[in-house]
Image (cartoon, rainbow, N blue to C red; front, side, top):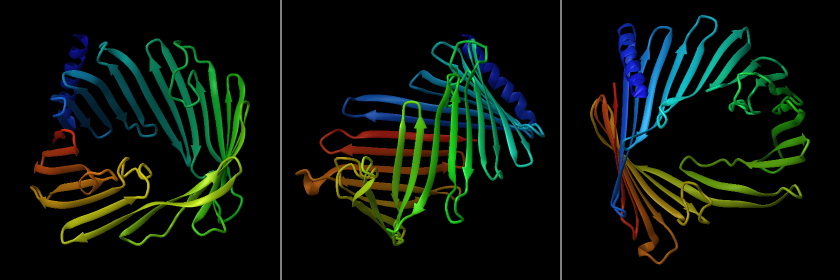
Length: 364
């Protein structure tokens, strides 16, 4: 009950603030129909925002069916020299406060100082970050108290602030045409943690092949990694997908692999596309077990100087189905008014019932 009362209070507060600023509302809903299991689910997202001359406030809630999954408040205060941002997260299940993150930034010439506080019930963490955009060597300086080495998780349920980690990053130019070598030293409350050296990419004698590297010296790991990358020039309507088979143990190149290609063309107002994968699962655009995607996209008239869009995609595999066709997916997007758009999708794997999604967006 207190949770709902707090939501209503926040909405009233935003309504009052809208008298001195700009009020925005965004609502999104998705209805999923699984015809195979004869089930229906509903995902929803709502945002109420207020933007004034020197501040912003956004209330966000989202959930599934009648259950709230997330309740969050984001804000920003544009102080003249030190802007402040904050995020409040609440747990709708227990109707309780979950965490708060605040960040205060101060810029002095080319150096930016930021102070971040992460609070949880009965616990607090602090992170100080210094960065100089024009320094010839210093990239960053981080010091964390009661936080993990990634600076986002509070370590102990206490408001005491023991030192938990520090990190210094620096860059060293080593040739005029090369990316600088980047060094990073990390210390924890136990002492030395690791030193990382990263460099590259560096051009090689092979056309299109570049190498990056990482040297790691840590208490539990001493390693050297060479990471090749491949960049090929493609024609405007054809893209080749290729890679390098690199042996980490011997630091040697085994072979050059071509995974597939993508052909695109425009006929009248219809965009046609064909993506061929030589092996299932090698290309993310053609998920396994399929090896061929044929698609078409065309725009349709809509309102308010906007255009709707229809896409149709057919996926083929090597199974003994009709022409190898295994899956068909169709989507449409259609703005109906300046504030309302609808969206739909049908995803049908042959042999199964289709999965249907209908959605809408309302924005003021």
